[in-house]
Length: 261
Image (cartoon, rainbow, N blue to C red; front, side):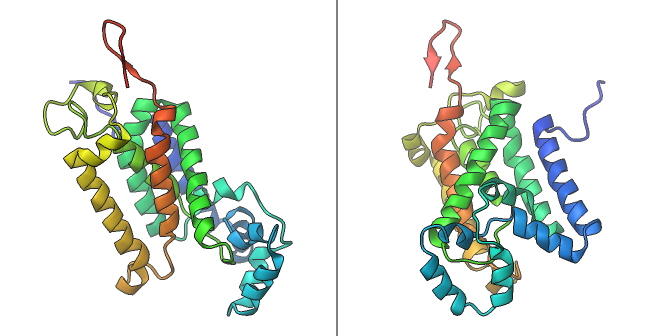
């Protein structure tokens, strides 16, 4: 019998998880507390930094009413926007539990998309949904001084993309005959309208939204997290993944050469 790999995941997904683990390990065991705070100030996403560009007076008013003034000033730094943080915040996590949850979600929903897209398009897609997550968070928290971190925007985008094809006939969650090998992940995708008319896809969509309300809005109350959860970034990433999937997907071809969209 041929040996099976211990981790049956695409290499790009394993590499992404390994990178997240290494980064958090360095923060946890190598950097001092002060160095870690400086890393957060440099690479986490702080909305008020960007609002200072066009509405400094409102930022100043918000700072006056903010109880943790010293922390706010630290993360505001010199007040210049750090455009790279639209991406780099996704590589940082609050603790090992936070990282573990995102890593499991990345493995579960990153693997199907990586098998369909390949390493390059998968990576570009993750970057796009990471940016979308930060954008959605910024839209509702323009005057926040404390940083946002976590890969949840990206993994939510992967989830939104998977809804478009994993429930298709012969797909990995199609409920019937599953195509062999990677063919299961390359079935023709649902249209956006199809996501809302396919019972399995819509049920999953509703479940995912409910789960995010539970963990996002009610997480501190239920004791799942000590701090607020950036559920807006989850929503932004998910919607981006759902909507931009066709732009990065390649149509399947029938044996006769006809495109399947």
